[in-house]
Image (tube, rainbow, N blue to C red):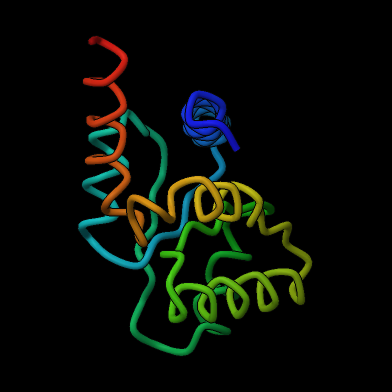
Length: 132
């Protein structure tokens, strides 16, 4: 994939995430640094940090409040496992988990960052390169 195409797709993915957030769909992340990174990128909607208990309990809590969520865990091995568990548990209670955004970020950003908290730095780098 060409560099310019990858940058364009990264920006489109971020814009899609912003739109989903504006539509009231919460974004599920692993930690507080992930929340800070997304806020710095202009995400204004609900961002929910994973709890410390069993994933099934977390998914049930989400299912009581939301019909749809965006799962945005890191794209390392642990994040992959968490994403699968959250999506499976949320789907089992009738919810609609969106893991497509995470999949696109993983594919497009893995050369630069392995996690959500690194997205802010990546987009700053992109912005600086586009300004040159």
